[in-house]
Amino acid sequence: MENIRRGIKVKKSQDFVGFFFVIAILLTVSLFLLILNKVWGDISVPLEEGLNSAIPDDSSINISKTLSQTTSSGLLFDKLMPFILIGLFAFVLIIAGSFMQHPIMIFVGIIIMAVAILLAVIYSNLYNSISSTTEFADTKASMGIQDKFMQYLPVIIFIMVIGVGSAIIYSRRGAGQL
Image (cartoon, rainbow, N blue to C red):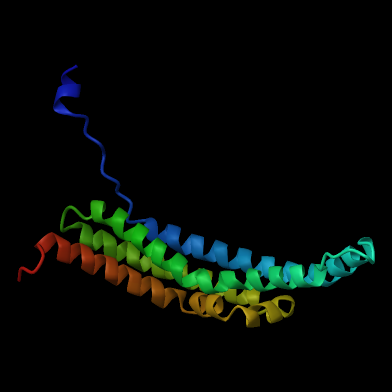
């Protein structure tokens, strides 16, 4: 009963490791979209032929138009990659804000930054080696934004870490104080 009056202490999130989550999500989404667009490109023509042959000749359904709209909307996910990155950056900023309560945590943040950049380099190389195969060459060419983001993933993660660290340090000093 006494705990209820004093209030229950909620353990603060100690999750500056959110950068690892961001890198894993970016790799997963990028590989998923790459494979999705490759598979759709492979099955769309046989699917269209099969559906056109199954529909009666006097039908008003236009399968070609519907499938072409589906193909173009699949490639629109490529343009959403910057928004995914912005959302994940906000997630890491919120989570890291509760972690950096003590100045010694700056050194922990530097170690995590080094590991996150190493992980970003590995994932960037993994994505590049998968997308550079002959099977994915056409799909990679049609997804330019995603390819650039994954090519420069280590630089993006470095900028994110510096941005989050700077925002947290600035917020601890007090707004506008020198």
